[in-house]
Image (cartoon, rainbow, N blue to C red; front, top):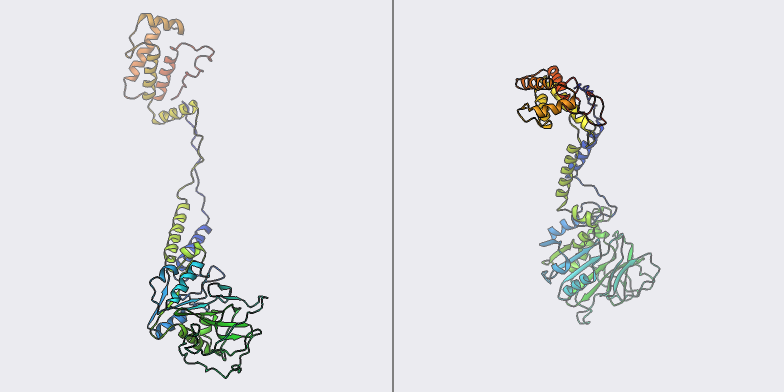
Length: 450
């Protein structure tokens, strides 16, 4: 059989270098975020871990040195309030989301048992309703008129359940001025009762986008020309302080050297809810649950290192799997091939080996089986006569060709040329097929070479 032409050698094309540089940059960025993580959203959570200008980390570190017991709460409010002591103070400073109705009920139930609560609305989005107390923080740009507030200055202990004694504020407690005399540098907003404030804002940079609206009597702590900014309400055995802005407690406000009294006012407000030996708790559960779920869960303070490590491993795995090694592979052939292709491939293998014994033995055994001459080729006169009639050869010629083939297969090696000649002689013993081509050119006709 004719040998097939050798395939053209495959040349390896040089791979481009830019994917390597891109992969290295992505890997370096994922490793760098382990030490510095940028802000991905436009409204970062201003919690007590945040050291940016809008965070509360400076206030938390200061209170740790001023109060003996300061902690954070990361559990849901409905669960944490069950074990929180009633002589504690809880601070909600600009939460990422407002408390739900069930959380407000749990908070006010805890306050009524003796707890103290400080709530400051977020500076960017000051809307914070508290329907259970009839108090709400609305935007100062709202067109609705400011409801009338009944201010009570230095209430007497015997004035009733709404007039509980207030602990002295230090170091800037201002004594109550005479009736009808307003404090300096303070003008009551339109619609107010004109009563003086309990806390003066002289020398303080108070920034707010909202104002407080109350439908019940509440103690006005201070107010500006935009409206009331701080009120206090007695609830059972405890108290609730509501502020219209949380900017005062931010790192930016406390680090303002031009207005150093900002820190004095922030401590003064904390002292209204937390005594010298009280437990001061900063709630972070509302900040954690107020973030988007994917960002809040995977990129919070505890899971962020694990998330970044998984991203780094995925980058390395994708880079290793995308690389190509060695010469390019040829295009795959169709899954189905014709019998002629298989025969040509097998013939090429035998031709390269240089020994035609294997194909000669296979052909001779199959010929004896097809002609029903037996495995040992017994020369049956009747069967040989039938083959002679169909092939046109004499019985002696048939016996001579079979004997020649037997001698060839008994050898250890047969040249390709000799094997091709013997197969050609044996092929003429087969009866011709109807409608087939001439002998030597049909399907069963072998080639002159193996």
